[in-house]
Length: 229
Image 1 (cartoon, rainbow, N blue to C red):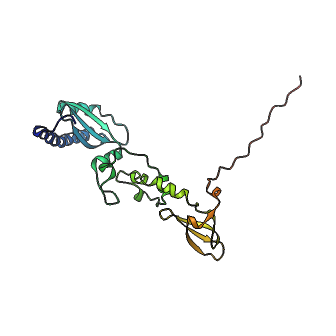
Image 2 (cartoon, rainbow, N blue to C red):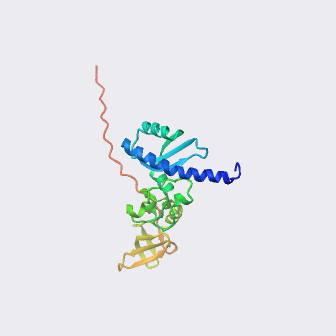
Image 3 (cartoon, rainbow, N blue to C red):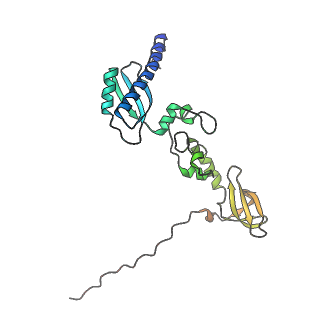
């Protein structure tokens, strides 16, 4: 902390926030006049009023040099246009997630961690874009929160399709419940289905190893036979 915020500082802050709305409207009007393919997200005016930053999103690169000149001529200060991603846009605007709580990115997340579809598959979630995507249209950040825990549970369980031995006989794993760490096993005899924990089954761990790619037969190498001179 550099200094305590006083009444004059708070007044200047509120004035800057009010000016940002006016800057937003003017910039939006200029974007429409120039017919630029960009979407203005928000405006931030520096405390000392020496700089105004306009945040925007765009699907491709935008030539906004003339727009910067227009804005600099109007506001008589430094102008910066900064392109951000859709996740940063959601963080700035905020909103409610599918869980009913405030978006993680706008409430407590400081940085965005990479999220992959493999995380959703590991948690046995339905691969539906509507259920896996957040307001930004990308995979939800919360998919990475429990990913390590699911991997640990998966390491203690047989894979789907593995042959296991149970107290009732041998069978094959048809389904896994990683939260309860149970497996649905279909027995070979009688078509009986059981729900068992990892301690109630034995299996060959080599079945859990990923299968390697089949090797292609190597083409015979035809070498030129030596010629007699």
